[in-house]
Image (tube, rainbow, N blue to C red; front, side, top):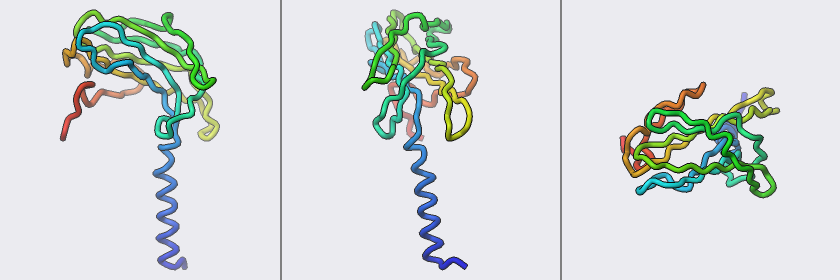
Length: 162
């Protein structure tokens, strides 16, 4: 039988390791130059594959399968507008877009699958970000149609206290 103090120590250590795992995870990010454009206009989006909770490192990213925008009910493919960038030697991507009309612009990315040895499978990190043009507050909760369900819970310009 394990002494109670040792049992608690083992449990605490195990839980610490389990809860620390998400901090070591990597994610696909879409980082806009602004979340809200009060006067509309240009927004630049950086597509980065990184460990955000650790502040990096940035990982090399293959050219995405698709990058697009859903605005005012219309989807537009922006993949041809991608420009290759570099962050500390790792390939990242950038795209710029002009938002001339009021409403939410939902930018999304379907990256190339990558092999995750720890899980012994290929993984795709779908991502989206919302930019509110002319601070309209409209359309931010539209679904893009990705093969995963990731609805927006809060408008890009405010948090909801529930």
